[in-house]
Image 1 (cartoon, rainbow, N blue to C red):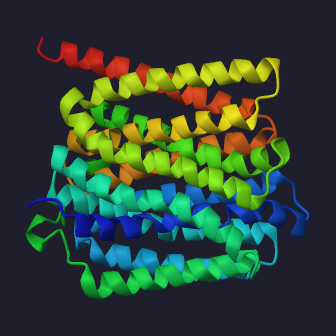
Image 2 (image 1 turned 60 degrees about the vertical axis):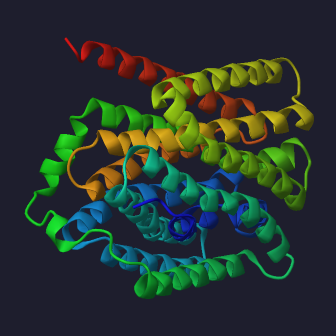
Length: 394
């Protein structure tokens, strides 16, 4: 069965709920800080809470999918997303908003985890990478449209209205899954009797799975650490309006979309490990150069914006090969592998986002520091995986 664009679009729509829930309210974050009399770091923690919810729910949803099929956990997660979005809109304090964002993230992860498992149910290798790239095409549109839409919508409604719109999107996805998306895991392939701890223990004992999962998490860190810091860097550091920096974020997302579509072809021609190694080297070099520039002088927007576009493009080259290589290296249920991949990937992202939020938001140095460590770690993992491959025949 060949991967189809239509199925990729459907999977992309489900997976984009999480990114859209992140990007839509980015233009509102400085205003939310003023409304709730909170500093920028406190408002940024609503992002970290969302990432944490995304991470923690992956494993139980993946296990439920292996045991009972993909549709039922997906429907339950979408229902939670819609309810939590309404609760976010009704939040009366920052602590309540953080808690509701955590629940919203748990609901959104149903789309991400279930979609990855559904792709693995159908394909592996290059074909899975093609379908994943179709999916990322739709996911990638959300950073383009969501900040722009958020900046325009804020002229007609408050930030609470944005969360009500997210609730509507979750309800639409719930209806679409209930009536139109077929089950990808037939009953005869479900792991009814396999203990959960046994499946995850085997995955944690697979070095290739862990290595590629770490790389996938670090690749995801690039855009999400960036969007955590960007609203405050752009507004306080460069003096841009919400609409102006939304346009720049859209340019970043476009470069990532384009790069993602070339990733399956490059993965087939070069191999996943050489591709990721080369991209990480370029990214680390660019990050080191702009960090050194930031130490000696103020980095102008004309330099920072091309750098950020380059980063988003490079992360697009890495994410698909890393995710597919992790799933191909896993044995056992696709749901367990996708769930553990998502949990570890987003836990890394949440930690990076939290690190950025705890550091000053105006300077680019905290952001470049987090990104530089990410790229260096990628290179070390690629070296370790290469050494393991060379030792395997003996």
